[in-house]
Amino acid sequence: MPNGVRLFVVYGVVVLVLIGLALPGIVGQAVQAPVTGPGVVAMLLLAYTVFTLTLVLQRKRAAYWLALGLSSLTLPVVLFFVLAEVPTGALVSGALALALFLALRTSAARDYFDQE
Image (cartoon, rainbow, N blue to C red; front, side, top):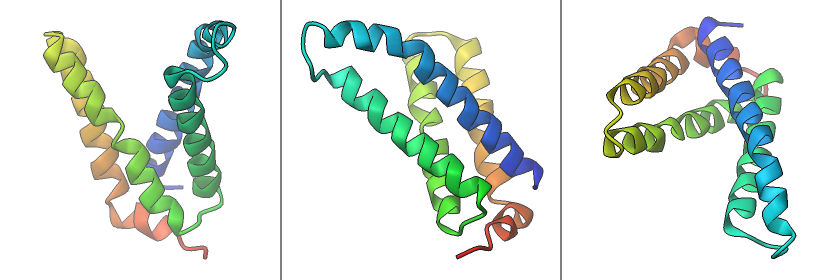
């Protein structure tokens, strides 16, 4: 497994951990209303992340584009930190976004996804 794909897998696991940490608050909101905006977004992100990581570990070709899509979720985080005037957070998340995109675009990472 190329280092770029390893970096993406670590990123995906961190996203899953963050979703898991947010779930108690989302479940607490579900007591008042069965369908909430944050609940729908969290469930969509959870499904997308699990599906993408599953395809990445299976080396499927479709996983490459899904991995780039999941990596693009770092861009709103950069924007959030810029608007919140937290330069350290913006630099760290920007560096993560750049590292993910550059690492996934290497030829070794592209060649990793060879299954149909």
